[in-house]
Length: 82
Image (cartoon, rainbow, N blue to C red):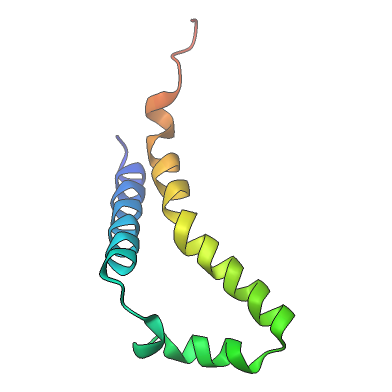
């Protein structure tokens, strides 16, 4: 496995670990340093703030899949000639 694929795999697994820790711990992000983002979204109009929140949530939820998929893609390729 090339270094870049290994790095993508490590970053993807780290992202997944952070996601599971945040979701599993039940921490309220508004009470952490990320509270700045929450306060910014609260000041925006409802439609815009909700859309941005949903986008950020889905990136946080599914972003690790892209990294791990890109890392494992060479392993899933079929050899030429089959």
